Amino acid sequence: MRPKKLTFAIALLCVSVCLLALAQAALARTILKGTDDQALLTLPATERAAKTHFLAVKLHTQVLRYNISWKTIEPKRGVYNQAYLDRLALTVHDAASQGIKVIITQYGPTPPWASDSSLWKYVPTGFKPGVVHFFYPPALSRLPDFQAFATKLASTLGSDAFGYECWNEPNLWENIYPQRIPSNTEFAVDRYAHMLVAFSKGIRAGNPDALVIAGSTAPVGRNNDLSTSPQRFATELKSKVDLSVFDAYSHHPYTTGGTRDTRPEAAPSYPDITVSLGNISTLLRIFPSKPFYITEYGYYTTYRMAFGTYVSQVTQAQYLPRAYRFAARYPQIKALVWFPYKDCGPLNPPADNGGCYSGLVQTNGVFKLSWYVFSGGNTLTLKATPLSGGSVRLAGKLSSAAMGGLHGKTIVLYRHTAGHPWTVLKRLTTGSGGVYHMTLKLSRTTYFKAAWVGVTHSGTIAAR
Image 1 (cartoon, helix red, strand yellow):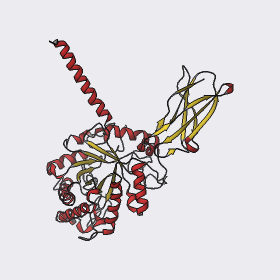
Image 2 (cartoon, helix red, strand yellow):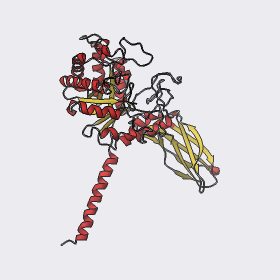
Image 3 (spheres, one colour):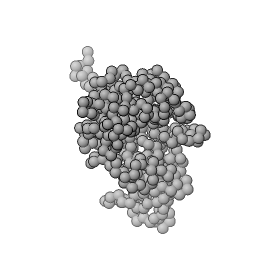
Image 4 (tube, one colour):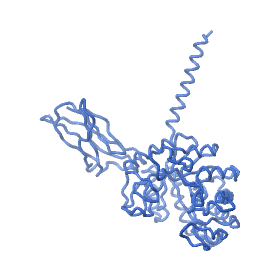
């Protein structure tokens, strides 16, 4: 008979091994990587197919998000822009044929013919009352039309589309205004709930296999006429629609202006009205049975007054993998879409410029450091070759799995000797094929390492 203490010890060991296996599995978990490239819709067929192949094979994009407009597709009631729909269908098919999952977001605005005229008396400061504006939601009487539009969209794209988001950032005034009215402090959520039901019926009629994704909420809201916090929006929505109406939920957990700690995993400065990536669990707990898709995320690398927060290209590149690793902690989160693929706006804009600068590529087409991090497969070598007269030649190569040897990149060489800290030895620019080198004299054993700061680094070597 086995001693009780031994049996207990074996049981503990088994539990420990199981827990370790679970922890390792959690650490190894990855989520789908995505981006948003609206430019694909405007490219000629051959260029579009080549660009989509590039995004799939070189960037390793697994999800593409496209924003579409009801107003553009159905400018007049019952009259569809078939040329636009055909181009969209071909664009989505190109992506699907490369194994990319496509998420379509109904971005707005409401077509003027469907706008709720009873709301036209409500306007934000600076807008004229009594006329149609882009931010009004559809009238309740036009929701059958919204449902028919969704059916048309889903049946046109067929099995090539993976999922559909109902509206974009409906907790902000730019997309549904007003957020509340004197007789109803939950007006925006109420109207969105009706829209979601109609949208869901339409999408499922056109393609019952596609995901219906609710939410698509912005990261912050002040719970006034202009915005609703994402956690309040989600909580109120849960009380207004049956959970069977939608298959998944989405959110845009940007680090917002005024946040003191900009790291992806850091909690926001105002967690009562903000859901950034650091406190994404706030939303996950509201819909514990639903998969989540982060359909917009990123860090601006150019200051924009309206956005408030920006970082250097080096920091953006460092934050990107941290964001994916942090999001992957949560089994509910299935994908994170970096928004957008390419910046829009001038390279050196004024602070009040309306461009978007969180992309992986600058507006002039130059890849940011974050592009290479997203793509992966970057290597930096370093070796030391002794020369006559006490000199040593340091040389190496910078390469990317996607692009091969990388020319014109800045490599920082570091050194240290016993009893001294690491210091910068020199900054070098890679030449043809990504090669770099320098020669120096040594009087004692010295340690060296190299880095393409923000992206990759070499191992440490010793020379004397």
